Amino acid sequence: MGRTHDLEGFNPYLYTVTSFINNGELPVAQAQELHEGMGALNASHYTNYPPINQLCFAIAALFANKSIMGAVITMRLLIVLADFGTLYFGKRLLEKLKIPSYNIFWYILNPFIIIELTGNLHFEGVMIFFLIWSLYLLYLGKWQWAAVVLALSVSVKLIPLLFLPLFFQWFVNRNVTTIVNRENLSAQKKEVTLLVTPYKNRKHGFVKLMVFYTLTIVTTLLLFAPFYTTEFIHNYSNTVALWFQNFEFNASIYYIAREIGYWFRGYNEIAIIGKIIPVVVICVTLIITFYRKNNTMVELITAMLFVLSFYYFTTTTVHPWYVATLLILSVFTKYKFPLVWSCVIILSYLAYVNLNKADKSENLWIIALEYLIVYGMFFWEVCIKKAPRTLEA
Image 1 (cartoon, helix red, strand yellow):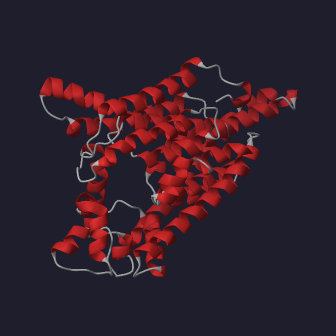
Image 2 (cartoon, one colour; image 1 turned 45 degrees about the vertical axis):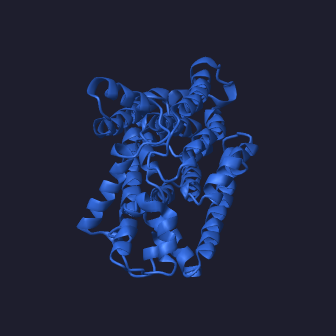
Image 3 (tube, rainbow, N blue to C red; image 1 turned 180 degrees about the vertical axis):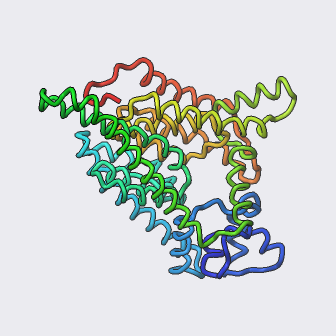
């Protein structure tokens, strides 16, 4: 969509590729080849790629407006540059957290990452770069800039929006912990600090949290602003809804719920289940936000890992490249189930044997094997394995 619209004066959120083809309009060179390459399903929907992702497409079109291969090379270079940024800030953050810096290579050198992101041109790599940069800035205390960079991450892929509630304890409760630690330095001021300072500090932390949220949301809205129309809101919201109420791929818990729906109702209940899933995910996110200790950076990132894992465990669609975000978060924690998932996710590729079918002709026994391994590792690490003392989270 980026190459088709961004440099031709079209708002990419208002047109589908199919609409141009059906009207006999070929606004760019090799338009027919691009249409055939993306397939009828993708071509018939409005784009869901946020503004910074569109900018990446525009850069590719700027340098290679008449060559598909040139555009592909340009986009690959952008993703590789983002990976170098992730390597730099990820390594620095690991060092700050006293975690072995070589952990970052579980992500950077993972064949799955190289194939799915650089090879298949999925811009999760760019989103991850901004996310890790934002966390690094937050750890350094540069929370205003962290909010702006987090907005850039959201403007590549929307998934970091899911993490916003989790910052509550970092700003509100973490400051109280700092004050409590300082109490030990002066026993004479201990009583006054306990009775007065925590309330003031919580209030100050809450104000900072609201400013952090405001900066993130306003920056994101400003990036979307050049494309704003009432039609854009309608098209974009409907496209995003497809991932909850229409598309199905490589799911786990959802497939079980769907089968139960077949037993009791005789038809696919995705329209109902798809509306329930976001509500459940939001509830679990809020529970982890307020009832799990998320004061330190490792605890915060672990909370992000759990929330995103729960979302992928319950959602209707889990494409292979989605696991990249889980993998990068895991390198800052003690958990390795995302690494295992990055290995067994290759089983889902078998569904692509017949590319002409919208349902990808999934073999549910293969999907069951994939998730048996992933869930087995998850429950072993979370419920059975004793946590290492050096990485309590």
